[in-house]
Length: 217
Ligand code: HEM
Image (cartoon, rainbow, N blue to C red):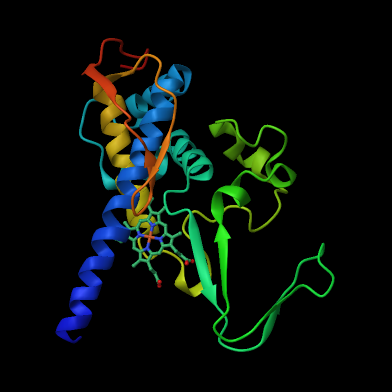
């Protein structure tokens, strides 16, 4: 790689690789603080799988409920909210509701706005705006419309950091849930800021040592 290309790669990794995951973790903490019942279930799972130790890479696949929390967080607030594609040659984007679809010519750009896709009531139901990790249970996911969940993009240019981000977020959230109580700031209403990625604006959380152990500890 040339020196210039190495610089590009470092910038991409800082923006794509750091900020997005930080935003996803912040949104997940917001939801965990707002939904003590969900935090309790995460803790029961973490206590069963991890106990009192530092969570390990190998334990991540067993933290299934926490993964549902993350999936649901990234559905409602996909940290990287858009993806774009540029036509290289004449083509048509089909749309059953638009006769003839959309004609695309070389250089035309199509932008997919992920929060709209992720909250489409036709795909997700009347409660599309509600935070409900259990909508990711296998029995409730079966038969869902395809291509309605793309927090990491799609195809050849999909996110290369997907697995890393999911593992990192799961490990961080498991450790936080295991050790800390989360107290939402009274009166805080979720507000969104766009840095390079979406993030909760002026979001602050009270953190104190965990007070209640679940029955499995
Ligand atoms: C929760 C965290 C993350 C989210 C939500 C996210 C989301 C995305 C999205 C939507 C795209 C565009 C994909 C497309 O156009 O189809 C993308 C691309 C990319 N992501 Fe991530 N990402 C995350 C974490 C990471 C991490 C941790 C890394 C690196 C370690 C990373 C590196 C990249 C790179 C290099 C691309 C460009 C890929 C290409 O153009 O071929 N991302 N990401």
